[in-house]
Picture 1 (cartoon, rainbow, N blue to C red):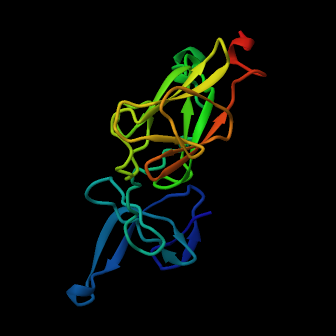
Picture 2: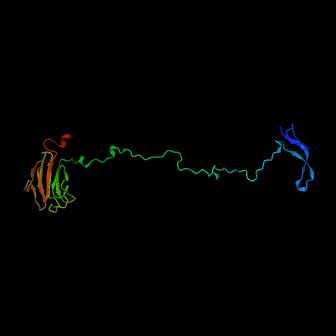
Picture 3: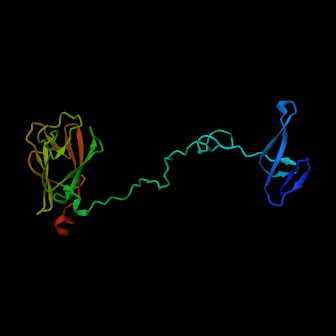
Length: 222
């Protein structure tokens, strides 16, 4: 229950909760003279008059502060929006079989090889196909041996021929002046050759290796 001071300075309780009275107050600035003051006085608690709350002035906007005392910064847009990140993963090719160009060997299958045994390009191997296979340094030669041996003719030095009907290989002399040797003897006309025969062109030694022959030919697979 609120209390107040009466005219004699005594503290009394007020059942109404609010005191309306006339009181005298000492005007300290007038040498102790008293003057009557009328008005509403707030209730007194514990013998002291409570101070009215200070009215806020200015804008109603309030500024939030961080625990450290500084102004709380506005949140900035994060680069990570929470959406799952995209990761590129290499997968298997989706090329359809019909998009793949057929290998040239499908129309011209290999029937044998010549391998460079010694000389420039040693260890290299070259495929032999059906029909005539001319050998020379020219880019137009079916078997191009352009590894630095200038004693090999640019245009057809010699030719290796496979006859699919007879399933037989032949070696023939070329159109140049340089000779070809088969097992040490010059090739002056068409001669039969068999697997692992040695052929010499200038300073280059070749070994002939057959795939097709009496026991196998690609025609047997059709």
